Length: 564
Image 1: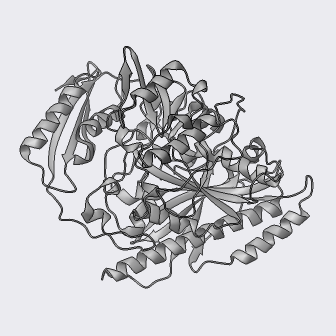
Image 2 (image 1 turned 45 degrees about the vertical axis):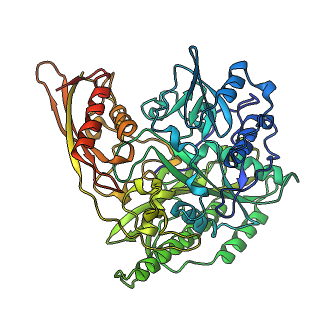
Image 3 (image 1 turned 90 degrees about the horizontal axis):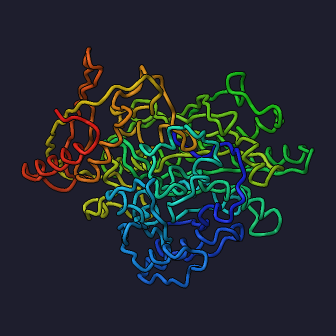
């Protein structure tokens, strides 16, 4: 389950480390104004970028938005040379402008031409888009004044925010260039919304001090980027949403907080569904007993579960009504959910929520009681709370019955015309265009046993979406016996996926490993992948498919593999 928050292991003092400024967003909009965050006096870089993004929407980026004195000469030149969705070059120097912010590109960069057009789409801000509708539906459960709803327009964050501050070890696979898009050695395209979480918690603390409107929780949403598989449930850009709620007390006193928790729990009430629950904490799912009070944590866990149960009832009920409105059969039965113990290094105790949908249990989200160290680092040690995270595509696929993640990026009116802000409707498929598959086989050198990124469940698209792999943007590892074989010291499966996406884009439905063979003498491995070419919008000709596949083979031959 890819989620929301992770433990902090260091505090940075550089003036440029702060996260992208937060924009409160209670509804979908592509023309909202951006005001400077009081919590981000050191965040000049990202504040300017946020403002510039909205100026760019009007077609009038103004260089005066930036404190150009803080830029290097090359960064200022990048702004002058800026070409939308392109890397600019001058001599041996390279750079790119993202959300109005100039970034130098160095040898660590691995931005592909296929990913650049996605950097400014901001689907979650497009009023009638299903992702925005889904976001708004979830936000309706977490309303002001208790919660603030935020989004983040600039996808470029520091490696410190994306990894270091969240406790990612230096050798964590999530840091690898096979998994993450690097802009330069110090900046990446965020791989999870957790990169912005610390600032969100800090805003609660600042409000406690009278700097800003008082609130106890937040939701935040953003597009995130990962080099990943090619199939109907994986895309290199997807959207995450997370939320948190906290309660404060005087140092050393918990009586008032217990009373507040009980009151809030009563006000929340119970959602109308059947729930299989687990204990708030157990020996196998322990609380943070060195810093937390059992009575408080039991109440926090109950509040967390009830809050998310209300979300599930809203989503499932809306999905059922959409199916009924489309004339589809819906079994009138209670909404069913179950809580499962889980482990995330960023929450304790931790849980996963599964819902009964179309005859099977669907893992929907992960959550838990926030690690106190996270709140302490964010400057709110007198608060305790919970947090959760979910992939918006996963929820939207369930909500609207959308079968293929590529559709979210479609600009075809036959897709976009089906959705309207404030309304949930069942997706009506286009005519399914024929598929054309091509195989590619090659040799790779042997690789010693190790851990590998867990493979996606390719058999169930909605069950294996981008929200399903790990908590807090983490990347789970599995024993080598269960790991996918396609990697060596010089080749990784995601290298092939990136080549296919760069060349064919959304014209490829999926790429699957169909055969693997290890030579008994040389130890080399032969891999055979099947590339399924299929457009969502038209029939591909044989000539088109052959030309695309030829380009894939040419690009693949540049890697350290031997084509067969």
